[in-house]
Image (cartoon, rainbow, N blue to C red; front, side, top):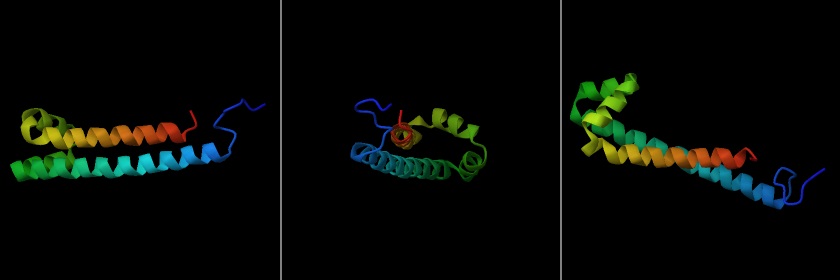
Amino acid sequence: MKRAGSLSGGGPLYERVRIMSAILFFIGVMVTSLGFFLFMMEAFKENMLWGLGCLIIAPLQLIFLLLYWDVAGKPFLIEAAGFALLCLGLFLGSGA
């Protein structure tokens, strides 16, 4: 039995939520990619070894972030905002 106002039953509201979740997911992926690209640019600007290390060894990114917060903080926050949008799109798209 379907509940009144349920999104899992289909209908126009369900389709709008699915489209909105796909748009949020896509925007989240793009913003996260932009943040990652800017972060890597800052790492390579600092030193070629920092850039290669951050590209190959993921935990090194955290160390770079902590040591060079003044240049890596903004790209990291952009990446985090994109990840939040991505997760919101996934959550809405799951029908929860």
